[in-house]
Image 1: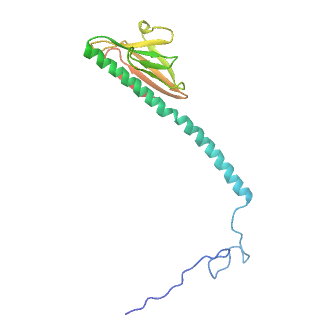
Image 2 (image 1 turned 30 degrees about the vertical axis):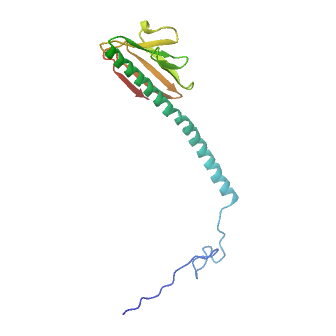
Image 3 (image 1 turned 180 degrees about the horizontal axis):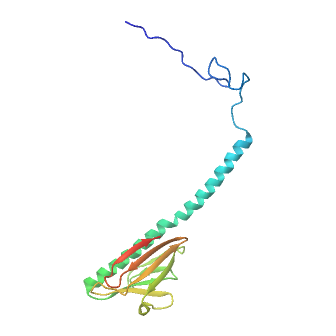
Length: 173
């Protein structure tokens, strides 16, 4: 049976180079660590990076609220179209740009965050007041058509209703 050769494991001793070797700085004991100035520079850079990341994080928090609101509006519009076809009678979705809110009159209304801004583009005949308008769906599936723009900061979401087919689409930018 053969015996394995024994080997020494190299270790690093604090304040010295590898065991049995000279320290890195020409025989003098090297000072390991950072100066106060280096630590402060790194902390300042980290604070600047955290500041930029924080503002982007806060701005990105409006994105999910915007997507949620535009999705809910699209669902209400699709429900109104389906109801108009099923009941064979016109159904309107009322949009109040000042509140901001939307809903089918006589049913629950959806209030949006005051941070969201609504803009309604629809037929003049569907404009009830300066701040309230509606998108009306007819029994054949068609509608008055229009577009609701939801905005939060630089983010925009567009809910469009095709007048001929009543199709509801959501676009973001």
